[in-house]
Length: 261
Length: 266
Image (cartoon, rainbow over all chains, first blue to last red; front, side, top):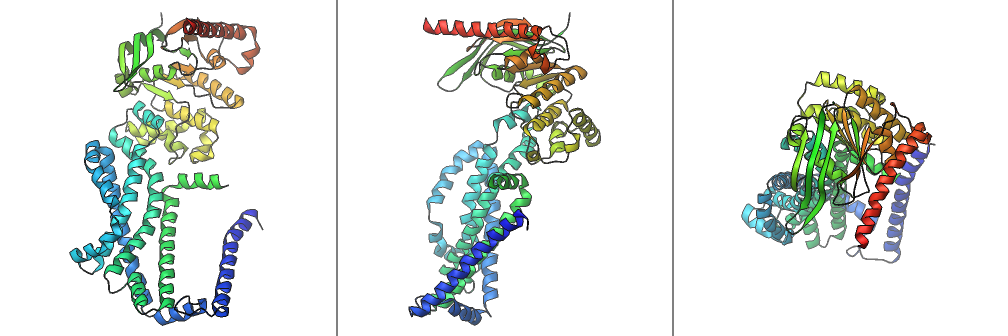
């Protein structure tokens, strides 16, 4: 067995073993201590709860995924475009940045009911809320990435008589990718949170809505199932962005991998 | 009489911001002849890189006096791509492979791709890194990266090559290789070279003449001819002629240091 394969097996196998032990301890503890199901259901209760909700589960998962992914796309693109504007036109940044920061201080989740009043109970308020949450990390990181270019690299381009557009296309834009992708990884997780919180305010489908519904019925097992589904959804979307990063910013990925070794 | 490629005439320069002005250069004058390798040596922080950046029109501040490159201003020489710079670090773009990095000047100048690629491969071959043309930058050693950087700087067919201590962070063996390569390239492409360094040995080995700079505000305190035969090799460092030239440069640098110390004590 090569050392690389052994490292990979260890990195997957050890956490899996810990998880298996955790499940066993959880199951034994809930049975031995006779913890009521509405306080803490056992893993076996979760399996039967999942079976119960399995008919509507795919649709709820789909709704929340669409809300989170659309909000992520909207917020990220919006944040990125405004960052381009800020980096290019200092006056625009000076004029708008105080308001952007002021908006950031507003607890975004608290405006969910307001969005429902304005936009109704459909997908739109969830998408907008997710977008608003994603917007700020992408905006701030991209502005930082576009501005914090190595001064020697700028001197190199200037010594070659590069135009502003060439400087942007071949230097600032690729440089900012290293800052952009970590913010996208954070944003995609925020997007799921945004969608779920918006569903708490008003919805007729989705994982957040079902968590709310289960809490009304004190169906703790179903709540656990939907909460775990939310976490898995975040994890999968995070993985997709991280995977995209490997192809979009391969130099950064290889630098990190080398650092790990 | 050889024509002058670069002339600094009574140049004064100070960095300025809203509240303070820091004088870096005072009454600096020197001429660099065409096809000459001219060195500027002085202690770290004396303003060597600022001189180089002034000659490349890459620095802004309060300037007086005149800087002339082949009869034109540095700004015009830069716009016409007659200047190339080899920086202290290789400054390669990590998102481009070796060939793509080398092709950057041609892309910026909007040169036709096919001949540019042929020229790039020819120069990479000259520098001994043609086999690595499709490799990502992070797979190359520091010395190889600096070779690629040198090749890139030659792509625009400059008349003047500025070297901003490009050998300083390299180990001895790699440095020797690059010094040889630079001499070879300068000769075969008839380049005029301005080399700034605080390494006296590198300067003596590479340059035809060396200007010893006084500490800040800097000016030329002494001009020294290095009349050693070319091509010069690292092994020459133990030969009496080399040691004599090195000693004269070192004495001039130390005399500056003593004068600065006296000035400070007074």
